[in-house]
Image (cartoon, rainbow, N blue to C red):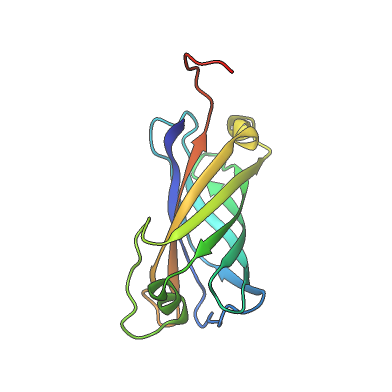
Length: 170
């Protein structure tokens, strides 16, 4: 059972980050917002202070493996800090690759228009958010060209997976 969208937001690459994605590269992201959506019981609103994606791609670029690390600062007073990690795979289409490569005419690629599956986790030291550390989260991505030349934006959505009683047995 999915509890609804836990977090959605965007990560924007730094200018000039382009790669043929044929080896390990680091993409540093410079800005993001996180917004929780109801009915998740631990709302989060904040900013990703630091984030990076260590990308492992097949030489053919048919499969891209993601390894994202980020630090979220909540809008609470005082602020809480949450480490967000994510691993997963993308099966990019030509539009995704064109957007990442900064090709002229490349456009936005919506959620669900390409295979992108992530498993996310949180490392939390604050009591209010501690339950996030024991949660299982899944998500997906979207991508579009950035506003600044040489950038692209990755959108993400995550949901928490939970158990639900059903009238079945093994």
